Length: 220
Image 1 (tube, helix red, strand yellow):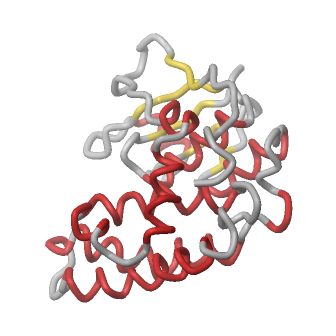
Image 2 (cartoon, rainbow, N blue to C red):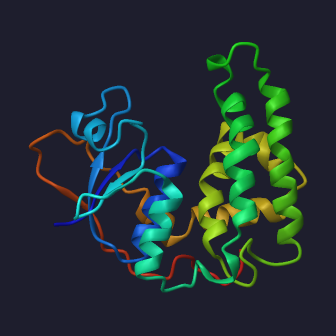
Image 3 (cartoon, one colour):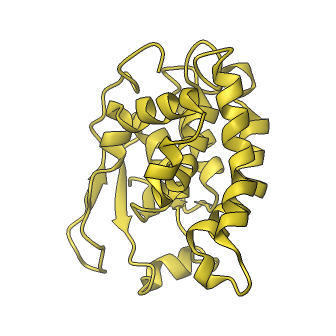
């Protein structure tokens, strides 16, 4: 039996998990979820009911995107994403304060009293620090991309695309080049593959078939 990945293409957590599974060459059944109509099988596997969720062949459930990434790369890590500490500090900042402000910038209407402009500026601190780091080394992982680059990028992409004209007008050209290199890379394009929404009894779809490298160029 293959692992089963419950996913939603537009979710940055799901995208980071899909990239790790693809680069690891881990074939799995993919069940694309409609968030407003979550299937009972997802709720049974994970009552938290957020994606991604990976149900392993033995029945063990991984409910966090980073756990899925580490599981996949622990089985096969052809590009050494886990080498050199994997940038845990960058990921913690992304998943903490940055995500908090990103949500209130992109979806200000969902948060009473949220000022999108204020939260955009608060979130910009991480992008400025990314830009400064990329002026010293080409990737957050150093000389080549590692886990932090692929774990953080989907969230910076979401931030950028909230108002891409504004984002591109900011003085963080190294961060823009880094984002563009990763979003235009073969791995991310493979992870963006569209799947029909899954329904019980539907023919299985599979996340599979990627053959690296993850990025086209050695530097962004």
